[in-house]
Amino acid sequence: MSSLNVQPLQLDKVSISLLEEESGARLVFDGIIDMREPGIEISPYLAKIHDALIFFKEKTITIDFTLLEFMNSSGIKTVITWIMRLNDLANDERYQISIRFNPDITWQESSVHVMKQLFPDLISLEMS
Amino acid sequence: MTSTIIDGKKAFVELRFGPNWEYISTVRNFIINFLAITLDDKKRADRIAMAVNELVENAIKYSVEDGIEINLEVLKNSHQINVTVRNHGSEDQYEILNNIITEINNLPPLEAYMKRMKESATKMDKESNIGLARIRYETNANISPSYNDQFITVHAEFTS
Image 1: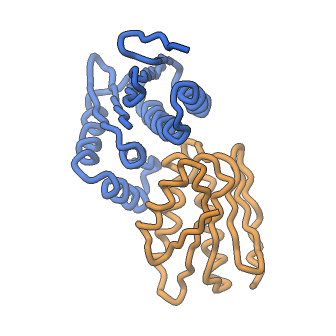
Image 2: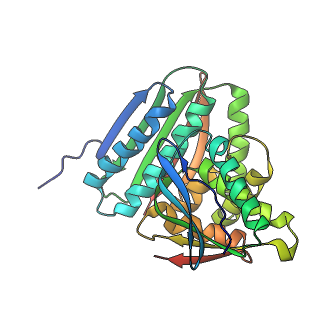
Image 3: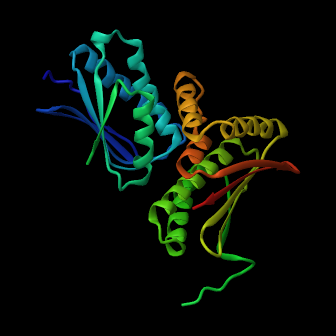
């Protein structure tokens, strides 16, 4: 796997870190997303990761929500907007997303299943 | 221990605070802790706290003056919980809100939530516009708005 070389994003209540592991890239969300406009800081970061995945022809990434205790609907919009960008790519450029979630965290129990239904060909779910 | 029942309520709380975004997480945590005492079901408490969070976010975004009011009551058998969130707002804002809630209520909850997610992701609008659909999907609440004397009130009824 090529080095994607994307530094972590550290905000007041949440950090987002891209870990490069033998099994592939894992994007770890840790904390709480309840800002008024999370997209201002998080969307450019996710766009950077999106571009790096395409550039290095990576075919999978795991979004790890298991440490994310809460996400408001503006945060959900930010994540969905990123995933929807995959629809603009040719099939051979697309990567697959595995969402790792913790069913004991209430917001994850329901929202990740809706994300999966929204993008059934792009997302798979992995329960921790 | 026997609970005291006031007007058919097992428990209730009323909050009023200034429209400052930084207080929302405090309100959400307060509601979780309040309901943890009252309800046996932690996930239900989490979902209702999420719903209050979304309602308060909307109220702050669209309030034209200070003073968001939250009223939460748990009815005596705990099967029904009523929440109202009230803010100063214009009649035009109420009409927009009423149209959104009508659309959400006219679709199955999952369909409404997915529709709002898709629309939200394709719009440049900084607001998500999916909070109310999220509430309906995740809690199956009955949501309705009302407008009176320059106040917008959103009512949410949660039944188990």
